[in-house]
Length: 348
Ligand code: TXA
Ligand code: MG
Image (cartoon, rainbow, N blue to C red; front, side, top):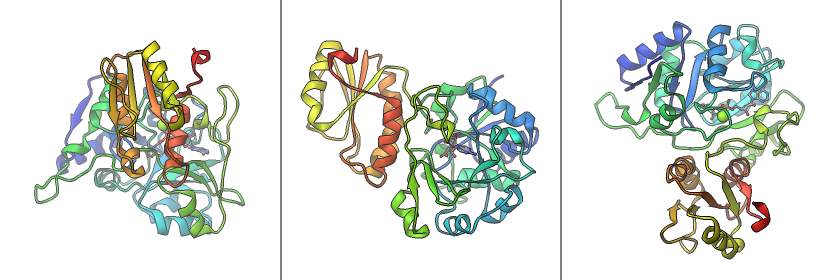
C-alpha cells in the first residue's frame, strides 16, 4: 500500500471522506495528537485500525463525533453529567466513557459494554467529521506502545505502507488562503474520563484537568495510573510501557541533576530534554530545551522525544516536571510510561 500525504483543502477533505466511506483508513490531525481513523460502524474498518497499529485487540478505541447532537445516536445512555461536561468542554480534549450504543462496531469497545467518545476541536478533524457525516474510531496514529505523532511526518514515519492517506494539518489554509495554525496545539492525548459509574473517574489525565472537571461536576477521582505489564487495567492503555521512544529514556528530578550528569558522562552520548536552562549538557551530548510553561512544554514534548530518538545517542535523559498540578499531571503521567527512573549505576 502506498501512503499519500494530502493537504486538507476542500478537495482533500472530500477525498478523505470518500476513503472512510469505502471502509479504508485516514490519519488526520486533532488538537491533541494525530489519529488513525476508520468508520466506527464497520467491523472491517475497525479491524484495519488494530492491524495498522499492531494494537492488542483488548484495548478499545475512541470514537470521534462532530457534535453533542451526533453522540446520542451512538451511545446506550448519555448521563446528565456527560451532557454538562460536553457543554463546557466540547469540542475539545475530553473523552468520556459511557454505555455503548448498538450502531457502533463492537470491536471499538473491545469486549466492554462502554464506549469512549470525544468531539475534537481542530479545523481539519471537524471538516472531516462533517464531510464523512458519521462516527470515526481513531486511536493515536502511532505503532502500539510508541510516542503519539504530532505532525504528518511523524505519522508517515510510524505508518507508511499501513494507511492509504494522511491529512497534513500544517498545510491547512483558511477560506481566504491564509495559513492556519493547525498542528496539534495541545500535544498530549485527551483526558479520558469514565462517567459510566457513580463518581466520574479520570483514567488518563490530559488538558482538561481534574480541577476543571471538578468545577463542573463537584466530584471526580483519579485512578491509580501505572499498572505493570500483564496486569489487567481499568483502561487497557494504562499499561506501564507506553508513549515510549525507541532509545532507552530515563527521567530524573531537578535535585538529581548532578547524578544525571555523571550518568550521561559515563553512558553517553546522551540527548537531554529539559525545561531548565541551568540543566544542560555540552557536546558530544545534545540538549533540547523546552518551554518552562506547561502548555508550551506539553505541546513540544512528543516532537522532542522523537528528535532525541533521531539523534542516535545511547541514552535519553528527561528532566521531570517541576510540580504535579494542572497540565503537568498529564505530562508527568506520559513521562512515567515513556521513561524509567534513573537510579544511578544500579538502573543498568
Ligand atoms: O487525544 C486523543 O484521545 C487521541 C486523538 C486521536 O483523539 N486518541 C487517543 O486514542 O489517544 P488512543 O486509542 O491512543 O487512547 C485511547 C485511550 C486508551 O488508553 C484506551 O484504553 C482508553 O482510551 N479507552 C478507550 N475506550 C475505553 C473504554 N471503553 N473503557 C476504558 N478505557 C477506554
Ligand atoms: Mg495511543
